[in-house]
Length: 258
Ligand code: 1GP
Image 1: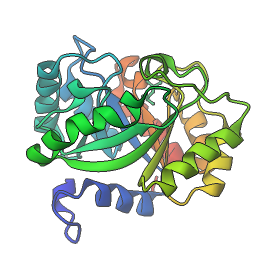
Image 2: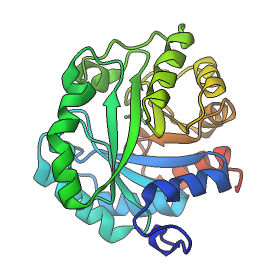
Image 3: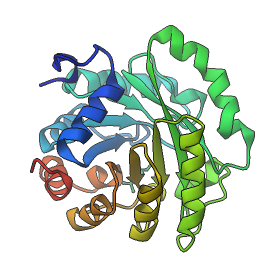
Image 4: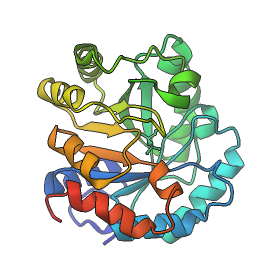
């Protein structure tokens, strides 16, 4: 069943769809596709990820510069799947009129106001004009942070200081963000530590997203058990031919329904 057919949920409300799936399944999985991965068959990968049980497709990449490349990737994905397509923007170039929603995110531990509020101000009007649903999210980079940390001029929170992550997460919640995302960086050698997920979850009242470096079911399960509501994987589908099986394996480890 596609998200637009979910009877009682307001048409277009991707956020409500996500919350409903979290309520029903405990922890849900989102697949991140990077339009800069030339040669990837986005529609096929997205279709297989959906069949594997992913709840939505996120589209974005830290170094994405071509809006037309983004548009083409999203059009292909939209034609192939029923789940929502959510933008995961790195910059102005990360906005596409063809998406259903956008993580309207602030990189809370950036040292540059551009990633905190300026790029959001530059894109807000066009997001409204296009009718893309903005979902307010506080983005926090931890560990080495990968390309996202470098580009976003973050001061990544050290893995052995979960209390700092709690502070930033709570600050995001108090500022009104609906989701908090702990990001280890795409391709991170080690995902966000369990203790950090557990401590943030303990203090936070809004849904918690965790991503970066999750490659198999067992580590996804530990992160879910520690309290993540959403687990994002990107690299996983780039490293396998068996997208559906791989996603299904992760989903079966985190979903109450499986
Ligand atoms: C990156 O958290 C996401 O923004 C996904 O990371 O590519 O390591 O799965 P991976």
